[in-house]
Structures are given as structure tokens and as C-alpha cells.
Image (cartoon, rainbow, N blue to C red):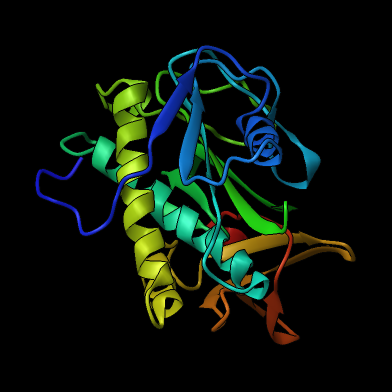
Length: 257
């Protein structure tokens, strides 16, 4: 946590012992009239959710599972920008938790996966809904603190495995502070330009080979940065530069570039 007064307020955090999904709980609270901002966190999540309907597997207690519920001060068309906002905030929380350790390179992969030496350490699911005429946003974030789940199709890691001694609540406090900072930045005039620049500064290097799974099949090429609206740009060997707004991205070994 910053040791100086902040120019923005930190939302309260409600820490539950166990919940199925913090996003589902946030939806329930919104339907009951909660307008936030409030963080709903849990010591143990039993039915977490990931993007594209996938389950978010909790390895054990001792990890961060939390959702920020709030009413965004923006038109609905800007809500997709929150994906990059959440990625930058999560990156900063992870990087600060690793201060002084020899964790290796921390990077962002589009749109908001935080990687340490290529291994995933966090998951983010952003949802929205209209309740009582109010548009509500939910930013759900999981961070592997004490341990990582056993996943067969990707490399995963945890903060403790990378040398951090922080407990889950300490990491959650970092996440709350960094998210508040970047949301305040985003809500300012021309705020998304600052978010886009911050994301690019934390991202995998330009030219890194990627594969994105689209509805028409996988597409492979070289990472070419972000479009002005945050879409992914990939340089394809024969077709030139293409823009993607949705799809699962995998970082490929360099020899497959």
C-alpha cells in the first residue's frame, strides 16, 4: 500500500469465508440494490468463472479471489476498456508483491493475463449488468499467491513460488490500491490513452510470436501492439497487419515466428 495520502478513495473490502463465485455474489448484491464501489473477496472460492465460460480453478486457500462492484461513470461503449485497466492494475500489484525477489520477467499478454517468465499467475473476468436502471460493472480478479492450480494446458505459477512472502490479504490490499489508481486515471480526461500507454510499457515485446484462436480457426503472427481502442494487432506473414477484438492468445516459442 502507498505510504502517502491518496488523491482518490479506496473502496471498502468485504472478506467472506467461502463463496461460489465472487462475480456471482457481486451480481446478487447489485440486484439487491448495492451500487458500490465495494470489493467482495473470499478466502475460498468454490465455483470461480473464467473468460468464455471456462471455470477458474482455485488451487487452495491462501490465494486472492475478489470482485470490484461499481457504477462506471462512462457510456457503455467504453466498458471494454476496463479489460486493459484491470490488466495494468493486476500487473502492478503482482510486481509490487515481488519487490526484492528474483522472480524473473513480469509481462502482460493481451488482453490482461499477467505472466512471469511465461507462466500465468492471474485471471481476470469483467462483466456488467443493468440493475434498477443503473449500469454496473464487475471486475473479477484471481491471483495465485500461496499456490497455483494444476492445469494441463498452460504453465502457471504463484507469488510464493517466485519468492514473495506476502499473504493473500496483503496482496489484495495492493490490488485494491492499484485498481483505484488506474480507475481514477481512466476516468480522467483522455484517460484511456494513459491506460493504453501503461499497458504497452508492461506488455510482451513487440515482434513476439503469438497465436490467437478465433471463430475461424487459429491465426499466428507477430505481436504488433494495440490499436487506438485497445484491440490486438498482429502482423501476419502473408496477410499483413490484422486487428482482433476477441480470442484466446498464446505466446509461441521464438522459432515459430
